Image (cartoon, rainbow, N blue to C red):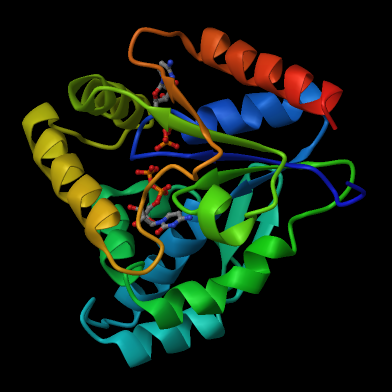
Length: 222
Ligand code: CDP
Ligand code: CDP
């Protein structure tokens, strides 16, 4: 196919999608799309306006007019650095609630597809392989045991100087997983043609290598 290649990495929260996506992109010299950041930015903008997570029309309005800029490791919302604020669990939970709204998802669809630039894109999220890039030549569904994921997220938040508690995280993550898998529009699920990869007992480097190996095989078949 002559289309710009995409590797999609979907999976539940803290399965390692973002970390692994960045490293795979770096190894290949490709662009990366953190689609969850767009949902988190929508959530942060809505929270800043005091909106309720139940108000679909108002939150969809925010998504439709979202003023964001990605610049390397920096993410700007309405001109202000927001990369740190969007990682708060409160923002993730609000994002997961409003991500169930079809109008919010629709508003972010073309914005995500615009990241598909040569020589290639690594896109991580929940519906990259099922909805946003259904023609991607390589789809990975990254999973890991929920306790392993809670421990990873706890460590990661504390390292960033954000307070975190393992029991609260475990409860919030189970809730968020159930909501992401249970929604009607673009539920979290592997695409029929995805490779399901369990990273519970893998290091980041091993997970990255497994995906690069999949890509080597997939591109040999193209
Ligand atoms: O993007 P997602 O929420 O799926 O996860 P992440 O933020 O990329 O990763 C959560 C944390 O797990 C990071 O601190 C990673 O270094 C760590 N981790 C991992 O991603 N993969 C492993 N195999 C082991 C640890
Ligand atoms: O880092 P973590 O995996 O916890 O979350 P994220 O990828 O930043 O996404 C935050 C929330 O946005 C998720 O719980 C999903 O509900 C939603 N999301 C989505 O619906 N579709 C995507 N492609 C990406 C994120």
